[in-house]
Image (tube, rainbow, N blue to C red; front, side, top):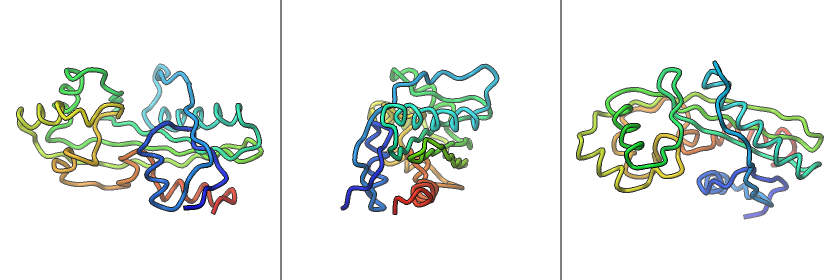
Length: 190
């Protein structure tokens, strides 16, 4: 697979793997160290777009003249963001909240061109989960697949509990590929 002339502003192995599925390998992968706290009154859609843009711009500021791709993905129930659980107890509460109901997975991707101009695309994916028993929830939590993810990791055990998806499957994993490819193509990365 040929290396493409862009930097991935993410340390997520899922994003790197998703890009490789469509023949894109970044010439560098750099994690963006930014403040990821929500702003007071910020809507989830605004938050995820801001995070993708800030990540890409942060890495661009350290690598001027380079094309940079940044992304962010979050799970939300209503207007409430579900941030990455730090403990098994936190994750158990997250899955109990999602079990048997619909929620949204919001993904944004930002590409900063060589002149430093950012372009952002956003996708809202609705996910319906079947009702999980207490035993099923504990099985998922004990798998530790969820570590490092907002809400859960769909590509694994949890996929058996998703009954419907309206939107982008790759967006749930962490990078909406259709939108990412359009943005990269728009700045000449083919």
